[in-house]
Image 1 (cartoon, helix red, strand yellow):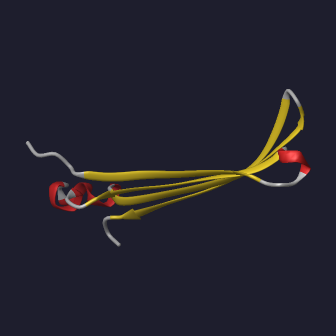
Image 2 (image 1 turned 135 degrees about the vertical axis):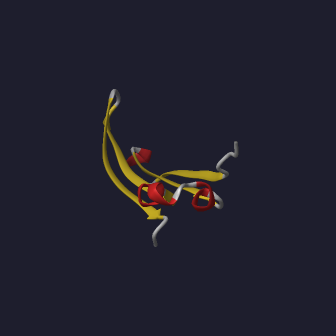
Length: 85
């Protein structure tokens, strides 16, 4: 029995803008997942269903219009690199 080796990281950032007395801020995240041996350990018949790398990015703009309420406008992007490419 062998293990599939995965390497992953996540980075996040949040920044308060100097507008509207600090009631507007932005945030973003980036993550990546990667395997160096998944192709070698996956049977040929199963390889089309496997991916060896994935990336995820998101970003948001937050607005605190009143003390107990907040609204956000999110945006996301996700990508997977399949074994066949």
